[in-house]
Image (cartoon, rainbow, N blue to C red):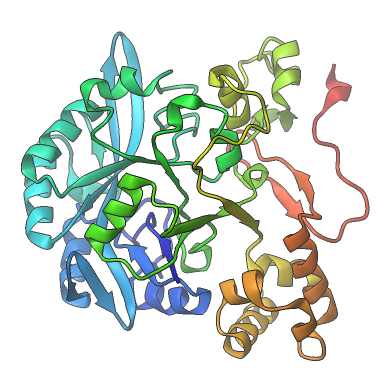
Length: 408
């Protein structure tokens, strides 16, 4: 089995930990049980040099560091105008080798300062970029990133499009996968029939090593670059077993809201108030759930034929922190996390596979209880909104209020 996290960032990306270097990334990948990672940020000159220095070529588009596989990719930020409206869209570009990467960078360098950020701002149309990339090499592929995020995505409520064809035109069939993002899960995306022909992938978008794998993709067998491309292109359910999902409510754009006023609203509540903040009367940030309901042509709960299954998890460090009643980044949590990973193999082995009975006698009782509750979906959820992460808890006795209806 191969667990792959195909969208992360290096230390050269904005608001990213200095620990996002290849040795530390590989160390945490092994703790978590991740076998393949996206290299991230190959457009950044300094990071590219580190990639060329640290990664050993393993053949067929795969590179390796200390037993962890990497494939070459980068997330770029396309900012442009189309049909009189400003567009801001993040896209993940995959390349099979460093020679192709160099060609991509030479081309993209005409449209932005690649050295300014690991995720560069490019001032040209996604369609034009994709067409040019395919001209560079037919082995390049592109995945639109976190397609529902309000500010920077394909379907974003503030800067995106209402249809795939509106964005990609005659290239709509030239790509084959989209990334659901932290604030949506596959079931939410299944409500849009236009996505049926695309493979849904999930990745962490990690900015620090501890966040690796908070979303990921699980494959039956090891894959090289071309095998991965073909599995995604064909939506191969024999090979692509399931995705690992962050609870979408924990994503920071799940509900509608206004962070400055501490207002969080479900879509129906926002619509009742004409999408206006009830405190300051400014426009709310429309979240992912609301945007999906606007574009959906299916009822909630619809499961189309041929979809890839998914499993929703809570990161082990969060489970330990809540069981101990302390912060996730404390020494006690980090020590317990490493101890458990050493004893049972990896974080994903613990979260997914180890029988609960096996924990008895060797794992803190509340940690075992938390893992059991997580597997059963017995969680207490307070959705994220307007850039604020939500909370998913396992031990509170009463559910917190999901909205501020009292403001009405």
